[in-house]
Amino acid sequence: MAQYQCSACYFPYNEETGLPDEGIAPGTLWDDVPEDFVCPDCGTPKSNWMQYQPE
Image 1 (cartoon, helix red, strand yellow):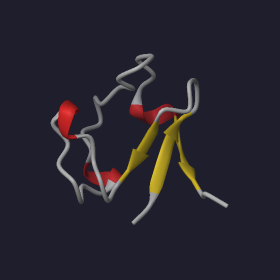
Image 2 (cartoon, rainbow, N blue to C red):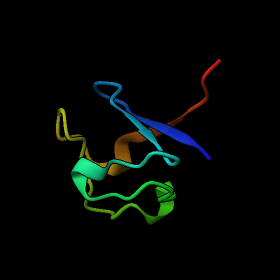
Image 3 (tube, rainbow, N blue to C red):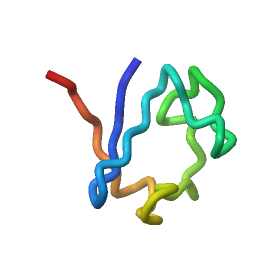
Image 4 (spheres, rainbow, N blue to C red):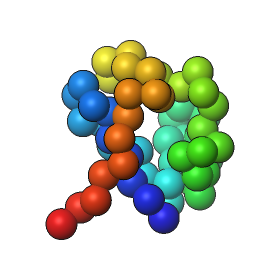
């Protein structure tokens, strides 16, 4: 599963764990996250997030 991060504050989104506190269940693919999703820390819209490849 992939990981993404906010391009403004680097808040992480991991498809495996989801964001249950934000109503996004574990296992939710990034493509299935609603288009109106915004970063819970800074409000950056989903369109400004990027895929993250941990080293």
